[in-house]
Amino acid sequence: MTTEGHPSLPKWIKDAYIPLERYLCEQPTHQSLTRQQATDIIDEANTDFSDADIDHALDYLLNRGWLYKVDDQLFITELQCGESTESNN
Image (cartoon, rainbow, N blue to C red; front, side, top):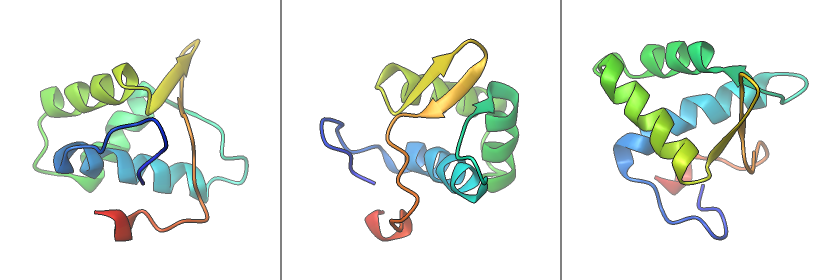
């Protein structure tokens, strides 16, 4: 999951990012998701995260270039569906 030009993510941020990446890779068009969808996906994968944790994780990913926003849609900057994100923990 290390992307050229991006520093490594803290573990708890990875715990938010990986379900988003997995979700988009499972979609036939690998497009985007809304912030609410992202929140729901992270919440389902990390039941111990509070709403504030999820908001902070999404803001962290957006501010550091892992995600980007166009209109009301979130995109993963460099979606890598063929690679295992689990092995990079």
